[in-house]
Amino acid sequence: MTTSDLAGTAPLPGSPPPGGPPATAGDRGREGAAVRPGHRGADPVKALLHRHRELCARAVDPLEIAAGLEAHGITDRTAARFRHRDVFSLAEELYARTPRGEEPADRPAPVPAGAPAGMRRFGCALLPGALGCAAAAAGLPWAGLLAGLLAAAALVWPGRAAGGRFPWTAHLLAAAAAGAAVHRCGPALGPALALAVAPGHLTAVLYSARVRRRLAGSRALADFATGVRPLAAGALLLFTAAATGAAALAGAAPATAVPLAVLLFLVRLLLGHGVHRAPVAAALALALVPGPAAVYAAVAGLLVHALTALSRASAHARP
Image (tube, rainbow, N blue to C red; front, top):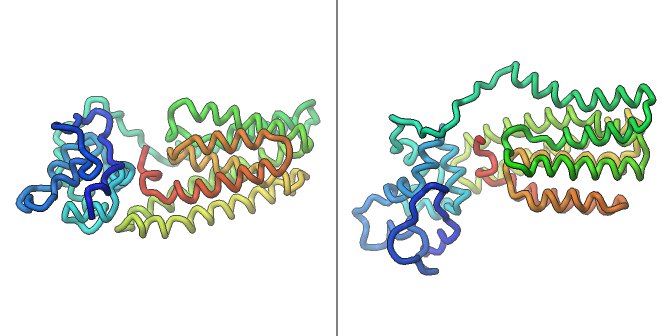
């Protein structure tokens, strides 16, 4: 094994750049250099701890460190160079060796999570569907379009975990895709999407909780990836069944309503877990193209991306 395994490793923001001349292609990263032959008596973890001190100081448990290390290119094979069997074992040592007498000055105060907060989020998820269905039941003009716009924006809302400005862009793209679909396929599509919002919220919450439990019980990145893919597939099947029922209740064509709802649900999962957002934007833009084939292609492409991206431990670190 060569030090090129660490070619993708990069320091976190705020970390000092490594000293000395730039690393070559065959000796890139300070982690690899710390355990080269001839340095058997050195402490290989000390340099890694210094390099990623900000990550280690902010982590609330070793799992966050393991996810952060993986995001910086450190694999189970790399962990062996630090005399550990896997990334999780290495993260446990880093967590244990990190001084915690003082908290970083800019660390936000923890927000207690409980049933009232969960109920408020669930109520926010129900509100667009209720408004859209009420408008449709009252026979108001453009009620179907309004229901679709509100439902699409709510269905892709990932909460505060995503941060940044892209979620608002995703809201606009999703609403535009839903509005175009309602215009092409009829007003019943809007209430169908509105009825799918609450099941989408509950399915996403259930999926996140199960993945966190899986992460806590994993001892290797490959083991975690293998075990978490069925969870993503199960969540997608559960929501697809709920979206099919919502389409039937609203009187919308399942061949049109279900793929669009599934696309929006995949967007929510990816935004909520902070994965790369370019494919998300591309899929939503593709859904604006007239014709059901464009939506099917967007769903297929985003599904492949989701199964790959959501199998990484770094996608499930706490925000």
